[in-house]
Length: 522
Image (cartoon, rainbow, N blue to C red; front, side, top):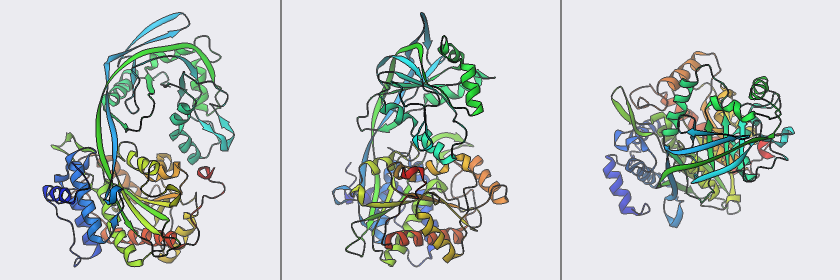
């Protein structure tokens, strides 16, 4: 199927049973609800990547972009940027490994003793020495690295979860997100993440093996094979026989937040891995609003929301369709309303609306866009991302994730003052929301970015409402249009905030820049 064909668009829209929303006679709030309802309809089958339901949703979004007046911003003059992925299912029972410590060999049965992840291209076999690399973190801005001076070429890096005390929370979050990439860049062929001795190892391991049974997903970019292994805690202590520290000491240091010391282990692991791979293609949907200033029109502000959801899955109370109404049909519908407002405002810079695929599989659609954007990458001045802002509480403030890191914060403060909407800090910083959606793909590439949530303070009734939604409906079939009353007028006010911020960025003489003390600018 050629996703760029106009005839295919019409066929897919009709198959979805939902025509483009073009009823301009209704107000903005009604149009937002209509669009959200169409995307969260059962006919879209939860919009899982690589399914007909996702393709129908993508066609619907492209038709809506055209209806509101955007121009095609994908490849070959169309609305799409097709991304090639690989879905990989590891046959744990068909895989095996041998762990050698000193002169003693132990056969590891999978998945009883170890599991290997499917989220990266998996080597058919591996045979490598083990090196303990502490937390596996490299944080040069804080003068800390577990990896500097450690020879990892052709070896397996063994790390324990944790972090040294005294590090800024956002810095640690970023370092953890980049851990595997940093280890790979030093030539390692795999990792073993240690699980310290558990009070209930069998219960914990059941969760690990359940997760390992799910298919992995990664972009088809030719990345070299790499094995990510989790070892059963019963085998963790043995790795440290004859080492400078025992596992008990390593775990005690981790719990105390002490700095770790890296050292070779008198151990190696050999294994053979069985997996099946399936090719999947899924598009980002891209529309562009050309800028009005000839001197700035070749620069782009990028607006993002993810289209994909969990699709059809395990039934809950008889419902197997994970509609993803608030996560994130709400955001895609919001971008269409914001596009209408920006079109009327005629911004100086161009605005690119990128509705991305595969966010739920690891931000892969936005990562693919940032790696190979449809415009020159150095022409992208910043990113504004909307993902599940949760319009189920009153809008008394706006949480602009990332406002503390770049001059986006100055512009956000100005909009806040103009609209009388206070900027509220992230009430749940431990949840690492700043790196858990598509803005992080831009941030990791050095492009300033922010994301938006309805603002509230921890410990308030609003916090309880949000917690209840996350525990009851998030990533479940009940995230549909019937479950939670929507604060429509408040939602449109958030759109106005985002529109005003995007317009300030698009019209400013200078591009956004990282603040001097931001980890992301370093």
